[in-house]
Length: 315
Length: 275
Image (cartoon, rainbow over all chains, first blue to last red; front, side, top):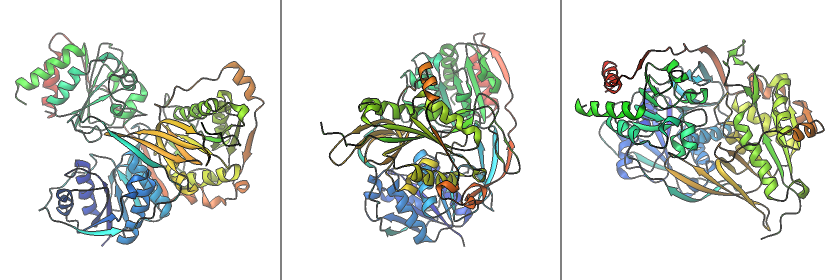
């Protein structure tokens, strides 16, 4: 049976949704094993075991994580060799793509990023040019190194938690490397991650510094809050909330755009969303051209009214 | 402060000629490659060039022997990205062009660029944008660092150099979703910068005139010691099998708020089973 190595890099107490998706996908493709960088609590390891994973490969020193990208790439390359994996699955964050990129060179293997669907013969589908093209590609050399977009596969139900067998991998970090010398955690919002959220409420210039009504609606819908570049550049919300060509590309079930005109750079980040709702004062805003439900109106009256209505219906 | 190393910094900036996102973009031909008419210097590469120019200015200017070289690969038209970089302020340019390069994926592109940089270098610093605005895979900078065995400092939101006895040291900040990191590396290094790092300058008249006298070195695969089958479709490790335009999104319902739009929005969401 084909061995599928799933790379996880998480310090949390439990598996994130995108990690459960990767483990589920791995199990459908073959015999799934895991390579895990960083520290992990026992509950997290047991969670991995609950997806039928019997073996977890871990680096024998913490150094792999002190070095930017290169250290994890060395570790993961060795984990592929030790496990004999023919398929390597990773998440789709920038860092994951970079780790995949370097593992690809080290193993002389093709890398495909932003995969949204994977056929049994490993034909990978991705969406290019800001959602305007659907492209099928295949790895032709080496093992298949694939980074999978969140929300692309359904996470299956986990079985009973069980501790997987741990295999320690020696890691020799290269000499010329960039070292991480400090780390500052950002405040935690309690809302879902943008890339994983089912619902996103995003604001732009029209928000004029007040994201309150957007946060209230996002909380009523269990969603995340995003922003256009105009709003992040204005300093109204942290840069990591930016959706668009130079920010994040998201495909939630529901995208609510408030006070965003919808320039091409913004559309690039959100037009593969399943349903798009747009609220803007200007009836000529380009965002209405791609909105399933558009409202010409003031977001400061429409959003609070919607939030109240959702709460009233007890939803 | 320590003495600056005797020789000036030689900085390579990788620039790419990409289809303008303001127009419709297409994939065509038997090889399913990108159509490159209506192309421009990738917006994201302007931040890398600006970072290079600012580093030179901070550390004594061109008089200190620093030099910025704009580098690209691609068909004849791709040299436009280098020319624009020379107008903005790069000192000279390099254009790798060869028919065999067509259809290169990230691995083949990084292989060609690594050979090119070895041929025209050595460089103290290689700067790139955070991604191209066409392929958007962000794979190439990391693969270049791997191939050239250089420290990789990607997605830098700030970048400083400090001269020291053992050469230049680099410090950068990198923002992740839930945390920010500070990074240190010795030179030579490869750095990709985000659009948060600076505000790129525009070419002025003086720069446009000066660019006409600047040199662009044109090189082929043979010049840099690569065989045609090491790059292009043949040298790639992935292959595009099919590409189809997705149906464009169409406009749905558009209403004007008459006092109940919030409620009608909730009705719509309920109808779509989104609550």
